[in-house]
Length: 219
Length: 219
DNA sequence: GCTTTATCGGAGCAGTTAACTCCGAAAAGC
DNA sequence: GCTTTTCGGAGTTAACTGCTCCGATAAAGC
Image 1: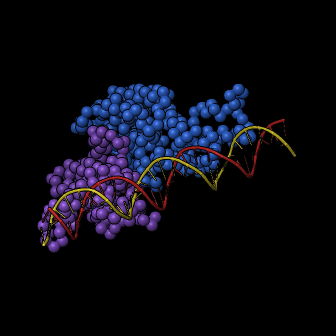
Image 2 (image 1 turned 30 degrees about the vertical axis):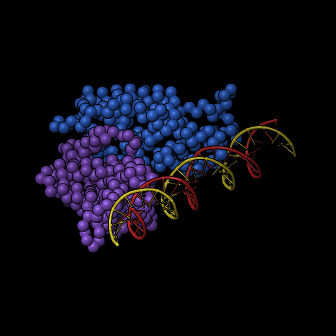
Image 3 (image 1 turned 45 degrees about the vertical axis):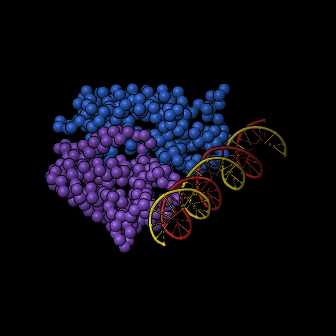
């Protein structure tokens, strides 16, 4: 994922060796473990579980990340950036529909929605706000392109897509087969396609203000 | 809901009065509150919250239901029976598709899926097994009928429907607008309809054994 | 090899939470 | 009035978990 600049020596910028290399490896393993554990069990999962999954002592984890919140913030930002990359890839695809579908699948596979329950419980950093806005913008383009092409139903908005990803990212039973998730997602994606006689979606489209407000800590 | 035989005097079988009538009312209010609270916040919600929602003291709650597990079991069984009734209503409907869609919507509205995380954590009583099997049988008929009529895609199984209900029943953010849920559900239901050129669902259909095994406590 | 120094890892602490108990208060029945 | 039944919530207790702290350990320097 991305850079991990802090795992290299500030001055030499060369990879470290020996014990320092271990520290660097641990750093990566912790983030991956965090994604796995928090993605599966939700933010209620214990820090101890993350450390165990990473094969690392609790002490080592806390040396990198000052608190559980800190770890969650890092994970959150990393996931958002990953989602932005996925959106860029999708825009680069020739087929608008396949691009959009691929984006949604990628987000679900990465359990990006599993972090949604964090909304309002951790401080949202400016970087996160930025990433969030950038993501919405990119996905907005994806949606508009697919709608122009006539493959996506016209009454679907960016936020519907966001909520859909969040819904599918919600942590389910521990041993939930990913096959089931995949089937259900295929069904949902099928429901997004434009079909001639379909009745319009019920109710007003989701409001951006509502979506954003959830992430305000003063709420 | 349903009978509540235990709120009547065993011998006279007539409604009680005064303080005993209050006890009876409390019993109902507690179950309704439990559905509301556990449905919204999941099984992790506190017993105190249920009591407060019911407008009843904790003591009164514990006099009826010996433990939180006991309360959850009662709620679980009641929900299953409600789901069975919904399925019967759906079978009685003329239009197979509208019946099925209505059934799914009813289950989601009642947050039946919110109880799914209980799987394996509470003892599954024989009555619950029975209700579960009966429900699957009825929904199986619903599915078969809609498929014969050509409105439901043929590669969807009963268990896909069950998982879908469970997915949408999962508790989301506290103040999640039901409008959003409704929109997403409409999308998913649209994806269930048979369309000519649709590609088949990925992976093997869900296995009944897997579904059932989750509810075994020895596991 | 020996010392120094950075890192690891988990035992334990302290704060919190939530299921459950228990008993005084209040209402019903006689 | 007196007894009995039921209510209701404050308090108890046990489990849990985020986090600290320090001994062990391994690399780097001499």
